[in-house]
Length: 363
Ligand code: HEM
Ligand SMILES: *[C@@H]1O[C@H](CO)[C@@H](O)[C@H](O)[C@H]1NC(C)=O
Ligand SMILES: *[C@@H]1O[C@H](CO)[C@@H](O)[C@H](O)[C@H]1NC(C)=O
Image (cartoon, rainbow, N blue to C red; front, side, top):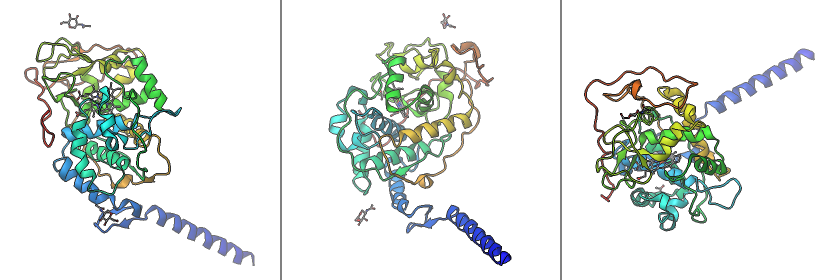
């Protein structure tokens, strides 16, 4: 009797373990041949192929990839946890682009909207699912990027986000932190999200120099950006004019946003700014987690389809001072954490070339 019961219990426990293991290992093979844990995610594979072929030039970390990430941010940040703003990561920036592109902070974003719209219309995705998929795929094309999460199933957006939700480079650190806080982000997360500016350029700050990068390696998701914003700025931009929202950078061909400079030097954020430098695993983890929040702001009940996102390539090596620069050029407002020791590239000081154009109409 007793043995009989025990053996039933043991058998039950063993079968439960087996079930748990088979759930963990469960994969579905989609009609396209790829596998995912959830059948509902299968429809994404053809869209990913379409994005890589028609938007990202076969999988590049170029201007379209950069702009797709910026678009996802400008879409999602139209949200307040107190209500009364937009629907967050809902794709309103694409669906209601005629309204949202009139906002000053969205200057330049119409190019990526124009490039995404015809591709979006070939899919059955909602605008939110599409905008945030494009960002996860485009960012992942940049070596060094984490494999971003992706959630699926956003309803169509109901309205444009109101104006005034997207921070501008002339805003103070206090104001930018307050805006992010209202959307649900703490100070450290703001600094980690700014790793995005390592794969970024500006076209509308100095319109005489479109696609001017924020670091010397805009095709790599690295921490070069955090380092280069600390270098003592002495150079005026190419046209000899300082532009609104821009401060001096010492690297020719490079743009430094006033807000990035302010974060790098502000006592509230200077140590957070320095912490990721040359710690790729650290910034990958922090950016992944902060983006995971951003990608679903204002959304509920989504399906996790993260396993459809390809694994990005790794960085070629550690970061370095650009040629002609060293620790002597660093202006650091953080005394708590020392800078890691970094090599300097050999040769004369560089002139960083603009990010090349592919599909975008020249504007
Ligand atoms: C903290 C406040 C932020 C400010 C004030 C800011 C401001 C800007 C500005 C002025 C540009 C250049 C636009 C142009 O002239 O073409 C830019 C580019 C960009 N931003 Fe930000 N940004 C902020 C945060 C973020 C965040 C949180 C993300 C993403 C998570 C992001 C992603 C990007 C990307 C990827 C670009 C490059 C776009 C391209 O190269 O086409 N930014 N940002
Ligand atoms: C979109 O949905 C329609 C109707 O269900 C289907 O016939 C079509 O193949 C779908 N298109 C894509 C790109 O998935
Ligand atoms: C930055 O460079 C300028 C010009 O070379 C120099 O006058 C200034 O002292 C430097 N600032 C710091 C904090 O090193």
